[in-house]
Length: 78
Image (tube, rainbow, N blue to C red; front, side, top):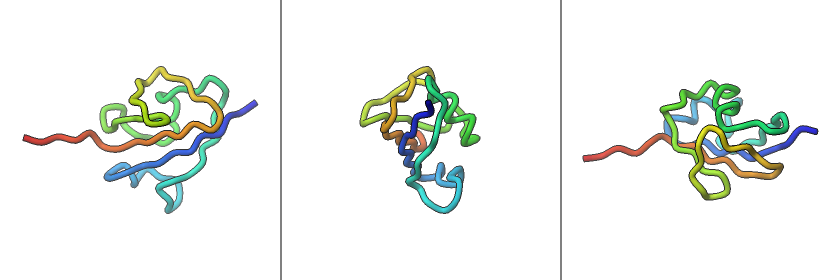
């Protein structure tokens, strides 16, 4: 049974959105990881910070139905 997550992309990552919305639902295979989502959306691994339900995650974290994934570019400054 597939799972469905809500995805929100911000900043320069908006160009990877399928369609014209920055907030969309994504259907995934069970046990899908952040790495799988990045591949599916063609987002480079080093070009984002990822949060699921408000917590920072790594590429190996698996999703649960109804999770909210937020991706935004890394912040740099001096």
